[in-house]
Image (cartoon, rainbow, N blue to C red; front, side, top):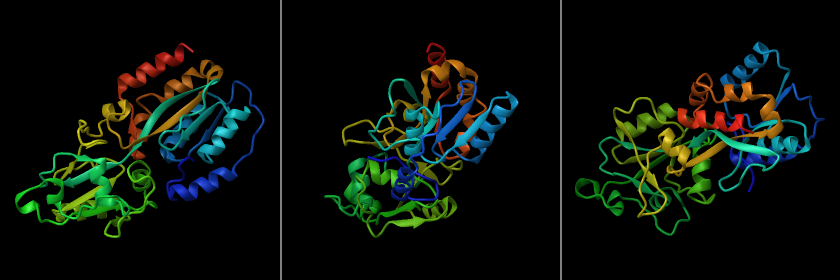
Length: 300
């Protein structure tokens, strides 16, 4: 398995670019901050890190050139802090590092407010979106809806991989990187996707961030297995793993550096940074979870 990549490229293309970056810079002094890894946390986040370093007179170098390149630099001693995005099931480096989830990429499933569908499973999502799935669903009656909904066509939509990661992440988690059905309408903007969903009663859509305005749209709870409890993508459910369509953004820290740079780690887990990650389309950790992580880091 290989890590995910840049915001405006597909995961597959980014993997190739990341594997080409294999430089191993010399070890920096303990007083310096060298942050490596993914560039998917947004310009506001990067600017905030730079401002923190300047305000605290800490030498800072950013090399956000990809997750695999970041891991190489961490393991070679060229950096102490990494923002790493790995495929589902792959863990961040272990000792002498500590990996903590700083935020999450998620896939949110949307339906029109008028839809009577209460929840959806991986099997059903695969049958709606996947070209190679054993079951293929084209009418809502095939998912148990009755009355006028039974014969209504399912109209699947998703966001373009060039706009965000939700579709590629969905393919990884639900379809095993399988192909999409030809009927899936791919939109280049969230506005276009939401407008289409609001006017098409048979629609269903995948998107990275929960829309702010849900007057005509509803977020659908998701479950892996048919008999499991379905969960909505609240910060609490995402962080515990109850909501299954998620991918962590790992903050990988060299343990000795964590002791030396506690102020920096407190800053990354602070209320100042959380809104920046939200605006970058990520789900941040609930406040109690962030407070617990700060406590854990102080004990290293």
